[in-house]
Length: 358
Image (tube, rainbow, N blue to C red; front, side, top):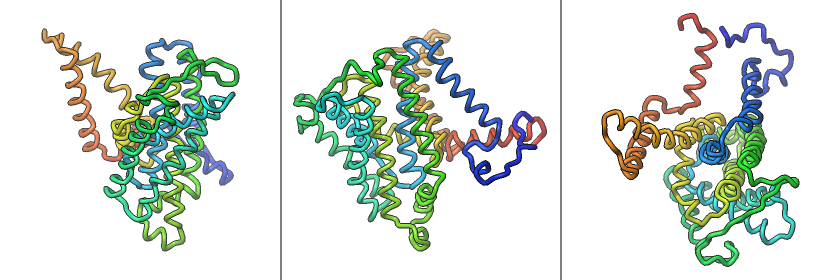
């Protein structure tokens, strides 16, 4: 009964089509934003910022980008790590080579560079799909690894491909403290996620979903497959590129091409699958699952073994983390193939009738 819609009438199409039509959802979102922007910076520790919150925000942003391509448009991609790498290295070159380049502009230009790179490697989607497209996008990953290792101009003539940035500022404000980095990432995530949510609810998003469901039928009713697929690659690569630039500039500070290996591509794909394909909120759930669960297991497993008088080495804990982590992923996919976002939706439906049986 706490989640009732009775008496909430809409008198215009604009009000009926808003993102959060139910008042309880709007209040909950407002409370969540207040906690994220006010309470968390006041009470969280530096470890919480560096180990959990900042990676969660950046991975959430990257997962939103991957979800647009995989979840909404149905184009399987294994090159997300390459798009992140292009965004990071392009932003680095703009930031270092152009005198007085603002950080925010450099990050956005990194996203634009990743967008162009993604559109080039998205061209095979016009002819192939499914596993064949996954292999084609995987080629982007290998090409990016080779490019940033062998072409030293991209790494400012660094033989190992390692680069670093320091003294970051936005509008004259320093980004050296964990709180400042957290607020900067949170602001970018909130803005881009809102834009992405409105985009997928509009005409472009409906074209993507039509291509995902049945591309032949979509073409018959007048939707251009080339425009829809390449626009999905462009938007997805831009968002993932900005996330990659944030990963390098804000979280790592110094990085090399191995920081954007194929492991990142699989990790982002797992976030989308676990969180829920075709759901912006599912991207946040998947990112939280991937980021928090390994840290939780690294603390929980030694404590659990200690109760039985068993000592586990660091390597043993690492192997156990992988096994438990993989087992939980398989379990989630079996129990709820539509991801955590579907479980959240089911919970909201049940709250509408609680405490009555249903």
